[in-house]
Length: 128
Length: 121
Image 1 (cartoon, helix red, strand yellow):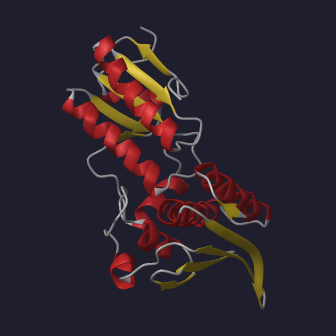
Image 2 (spheres, each protein chain N blue to C red; image 1 turned 90 degrees about the vertical axis):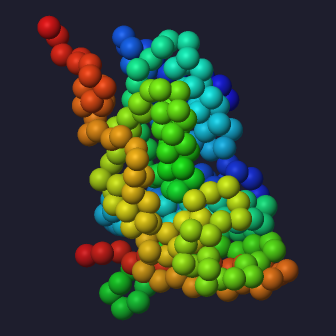
């Protein structure tokens, strides 16, 4: 899905939430993955003014989950460690977007090159 | 975007039910609407009902906390009510407990916290 306007933050988040509920995620897991999606989609919109979110269903053995990849061609993050630690913000926010969403999902990876862009991938597994 | 979230007055208490997504324009208008309503009505408190929100991200949390802080500067109390369990857990996991904000379980409790009662006398 394209992230090119503020409304897309809501659209991407709604899509993830609907999918999570359809796939039987409980309310806590649904809220976690939806909120992480909201944070990361907003980051793409605010920092890079555009990019995309790729939402996929994944399976590993008996486990089913959702993987969402957020990519942008924005300025990139010079100091990833600092951003991951939380409380660091260049935009007007709490600076919890990246560090917070990392704590909400099961798998989290971030790759960023200054001047080229950022890719964040999250996976949330369904609990049994 | 002004008026997108209606603010009702009951006695000296203002009640706002957030039922739509607080995107930038809506959030700013809502914040301004609350402050002007406080001034116009001499309200002693504002109860903000978020039971309709299934997702509260750090952006929305900051908007709500800012409303609370400015309401306090004006001499009133904002009370956040109706937060869903999964929303509360998500905010705590993210490391944002919204400390400093008054909270109550539901609308009735929120109004009671401000010293009023909805019960029939």
